[in-house]
Amino acid sequence: MSHTFNPLTVRHDFPIFRNHPDLIYFDNAATSQRPERVLREISDFDQKQSASVHRGLYELSSHATRRYEAVRDKVAALIGAENGSTIAFTKGTTESINIVANSFRKRLKPGDNIVISGMEHHANLIPWQMICKEMGASLRVIPVTKEGELSLDRLQTLMDHKTRLLAVTHVSNVLGTINPVDEIILEAHLKQVPILVDAAQSAGHLAIHVKKLGADFLAFSAHKMFGPFGTGVLYANPVWAPSLHPLNFGGGIIQHVDFDQTEFLEYPRNLEAGTANVSGVLGLGAAVDYIRTLDAESVIHHEHFLATVFKEKALQEGFIRVMGNPRRHAGIVAFNVNGVHPHDVASYLASRSIAVRAGHHCAEPLLQYMNEAASVRVSFSVYNTADELDRTIEALKEVKKFWA
Amino acid sequence: MNELDKLYPPTIREHNTSPFHFEQRKDRAVTVRAYNPICGDRFDLFIEADTGATNTIYFHGFGCAISKASASVMAKSLSGKARAEALRLCNNFLDSLDSDSDEALALPEEWKAFQAVREYPERRDCAALAWAEMKKYLESNPS
Ligand SMILES: Cc1ncc(COP(=O)(O)O)c(C=O)c1O
Image 1 (spheres, protein in one colour):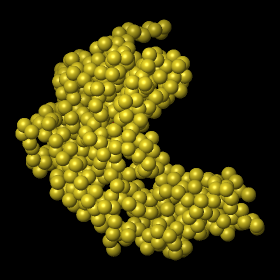
Image 2 (cartoon, chains in turn blue, yellow):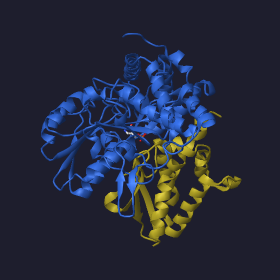
Image 3 (cartoon, rainbow over the protein chains, first blue to last red):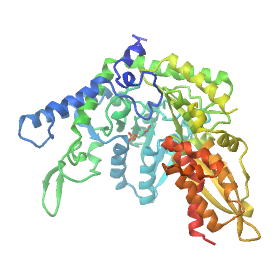
Image 4 (spheres, rainbow over the protein chains, first blue to last red):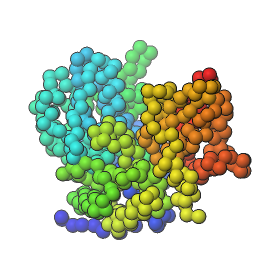
């Protein structure tokens, strides 16, 4: 480890913990908390600089436009992309994936196929299922092992000359599995299959170098990486960017319009119809700045450490079943308390100021692989501590007693 | 009172551990699926015609303590009732989860246990799950 950070110091950056000093926030996979720096950026803009971008001929607007456009470069630098013009701003991961799916729909012919994995969030499953159904193509699924890893030995046979795209998550939002996207991308490219990586759970947690990885598309949400709600990113490799078409039509994306036809701007501007979420994008920029103050290696080391310790302690108690046991994992653990429904576990933890998620985590098919109807999920971030783990394990013992 | 004792009063805990008519009856009854896609809770409600105009209700499946206890209390409350009466009870129970008034005093003892969900809106759907599906079924199958 190059240098480590102290989660207790980091915690001071997040006003939520001043307002809720006892809060143990273990629902980071749903949304992270936002540091002062991001909140200040948004409120400064709204109070002192607010104007629409790409439109006005006055100083406030051109200033807003410059700052908005500069966030593309910041995001590109964070993920090791070629340059800012590979970055489109969207509402979030879900919209980013839908943009790609909508564009690939037109490329699908009956008999074609798209390959996804068995551990996808619904956001990286349903768009592909829909376009496959519509176009008479089939959706192929890389199976998941009991350990919660992808059966990559199946990839060779799943992909063939009719595979039009492979879509896979970098980190599972349920099991925490870090998938070997580098290997997967190599295999896909050997067969000339483009690949979309869902980075919703990895952006801000793991160092991503999209150019080295060779991902053709990458999608993530600002709100899961210390940024604001309602803002997200789609990265498209310059080779594939021209194949992306607008999902939304409207103002701001056109070169020329008459009543018969419209010529669109080039990627990424062609995807950003309507008045932009300027404060959201600036907040995303501030979140990127914030992430850059943290050492990426220490971040994933810390979150991995918390997950490992949690699993060890949970298993020691004997009444907790942890879902999967992936060799490479981030700071996410799904589990069940024997004989107690996940909602009742979560309600109990809530009464102890511990915020966790219970349910199927928008990944119903994965839970079928794992033979569980639902689970409790804890997901960690930079401000979580080992002490919070201990308090959670104690609370889980009380849950067991309460329901005994 | 402890917050959890309020959310899970003895009636709910008892019905959760020893539910009423909790058994698979698919082969003998009309089956209605009560499913909450948000949390994955899933119960089959079995409506078995008695010799007279009444029904006996069984249920089976997977859900949290509140949804399970609520389905259990439903099976108990509706068994032996004619459809119109069963529907009336469904409406009353569902109303009782939303009303602010003290009408609760008049509720059957076992129903009162679910009054706490009025303070936990995220758990209201758990208490309503089986009753709401039963209500839908009874409305479209009045006899
Ligand atoms: C792996 C993964 N993909 C996609 C999404 C969807 O992200 P959003 O809801 O921000 O669009 C999530 C969020 O839960 C996720 O965890």
